[in-house]
Amino acid sequence: MKETLRYLAGLAGPSGYGSNSTAEQVTEDFSCMVPPHLTAIITGATSGIGAETARVLAKKGVRIVIPARDLRRAAELKEEIQKESPQAEIVLLEVDLSSLTSVKRFCTEFLSLGLSLNILINNAGIFSQNLEFSEDKIEMTYATNYLGHFLLTEMLLEKMVETAAKTGIQGRIINVTSVIHSWVKRDSFRFKQMLNPKNYNGTRAYAQSKLANILHVKEMARQLQARKARVTINAVHPGIVKTGIIRAHKGFITDSIYFVASKFLKSSSQGASTTCYVALCPQLEGVTGKYFADCNESSCSSLANDESEAQKLFMQTRAVIYKRLGQPAA
Ligand SMILES: NC(=O)c1ccc[n+]([C@@H]2O[C@H](COP(=O)([O-])OP(=O)(O)OC[C@H]3O[C@@H](n4cnc5c(N)ncnc54)[C@H](OP(=O)(O)O)[C@@H]3O)[C@@H](O)[C@H]2O)c1
Image 1 (cartoon, rainbow, N blue to C red):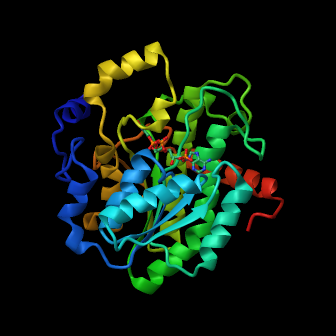
Image 2 (image 1 turned 90 degrees about the horizontal axis):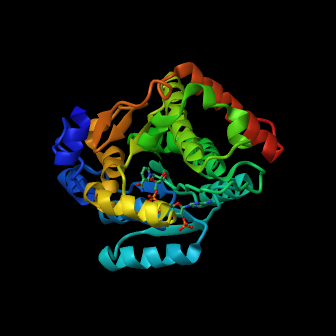
């Protein structure tokens, strides 16, 4: 209740920022403390929250790598960003996050460039009302939002650990999730069902994928701490923003709800603020395994906090991914 009121009033939380803060504002305040020569990979940067995150981080001098399935759209974004920030270095590479083979190809291509990697923002996402399957025969929302990012993180992790050890700058991984993860009930969170659901419900599939994004954060944070790697991983709820993910759901009822709710929706810049805050804020050095909303640490559901659920999901996910790729889990 207190958090809802704070959201509606746009009041700042303990960090000094709140639901009204924009990505430009939060990064402006600590721009002189942003280390030079950072490299960030941002998925889903061709539109919405990801595009704004890319624009603002590029403005702060961060080299941006955009993995995109639509390279034409990515090239347009690159041009837009460089109009505003002519020095911005932006690398475009192709990926379809719903395909494990494509993610693997992207990672191999990125690693062959010999670039360092400080920040990985797992931001891309879909929300589909219809049941569809990826080329790996996995439900499309789960494949895109969760499995693709899981493999991406796994394949890029050693590069991040190595970069952090070489530069002394802590690596940061961010999983963009949603408050909707808290709608998932424990008894409906079944791995096999998520891969191949019997009674598909788009909202449930989306919420489950977003819960999986947080459980991924919890287990990865534990593993990174255990090996004393200088890489953190946190989850971010961006707020409700009218982007492509919402616009795809047309219809009188949806349109009416958004018309009424429009006063409470965030702009893309407000939606990108928490990601930018967690990616760059110096005060978050060493903070890992947490959930952020409105640029402040917040609480996620008890299921999302369940360590044994996180560990179980991690093992099941690895097994499925490597089986589909036809290679033994390393
Ligand atoms: N908007 C909200 O209210 C809201 C609320 C809570 C959480 N979120 C989360 O915020 C994140 C960003 O969403 P958004 O609102 O900015 O949505 P958006 O405008 O629809 O952007 C989604 C991005 O993901 C990319 N993408 C989708 N499928 C892909 C695939 N198979 N391979 C590669 N890229 C793919 C899209 O690329 P294309 O250009 O090729 O389509 C696009 O760049 C998502 O994780 C979403 O779940 C959003």
